[in-house]
Length: 467
View 1 (cartoon, rainbow, N blue to C red):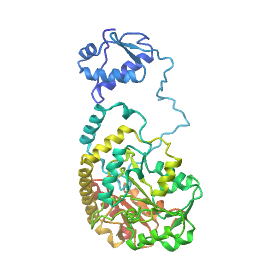
View 2: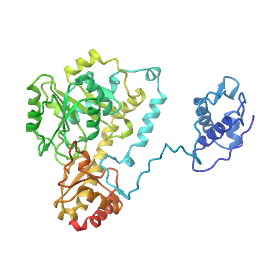
View 3: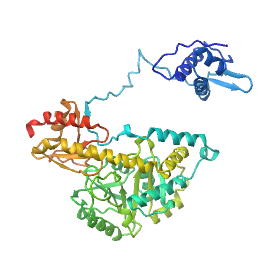
């Protein structure tokens, strides 16, 4: 076979069209087994595309087993009887499978999003290309179960300078998300560990720990953080806290409360604090709040951090710093676990940190989020007749609390009627939800200033009867 006539169209990568055409022809028997395909040069000339475009298509076909390359001879159609072919169902879809429909909103004040339009795509591509170009055999093998040492060194240096965390690379474990690290921590603490968690809180941590069988005790907060009187009465031997910027309340734990919390760990053996340093990178007023781990003198704080908010959620690289007693236990019992993060991904993030790109990106994002934060605060001024603001000056969201006795769901429904998606505080509470005061969470990270202005104007219209 010397030629393949393929009608190439605009709007889809050319190599994907070539790949799809040949794949379908092979599946339907139009190009039989053992047929020799045109050389990449011949097909490129015939289709008037670059040779690299044809190379990409052939490489994809080979990787999936549709064709094979015979040295010195060329490309041939492979035996595909045992290959899995997933056919699209268009006219008669499986009635048991339903596509989840997502409601569209003109303005979405999500507290979980980030501004991906400012992601350093060029830099990330550059580093990724360098890593893949220089890739050696060891990067394709199983690496250090705790994560690559170079990455742990880079994170340790960053945490010391930016968060005041004091640790050695040996104390750090890299994992694909906080969920995995919490599962590992569960094994270190043991199933009998009773864990205190603030409410409202980051519910994913609660879901993971409770699903693993831990007894969870919810602890209310005051303006300084987790209430010590309730913690001391709880009978817990571990406390999950977010002292630098509690989600979703935005409370910054006072130094007095931090010292009380550390003192609590000394009152009984095997007590630990799990410090989730959520959103700690983003503070817009005053000096950064150092991590609780940095003032712990008794080796009782487990420190959790992630790059999901400061780089991108899809990076899936989190880290856990273990105090020495738990580190020893990990090394004795669980060091056989393989790392859950690709060594290639670890190498990319290592270079991103060590070559100064992360610091520059973080400074850029701080300035961007500070601008959005200030813009939203200013836009909300007309709402101050009926609401009060809290949780400002840090993180990626604000809280709007009704001054009158209102139902939270009523505010959410009214906003939705005007095309605005807002989020209720009660969805983050554990156990019995409080009905008053109604508090709305307004995230601003993944929404433009223009959208903030228009979205708030819609909220003014939706909630005008409460102003």
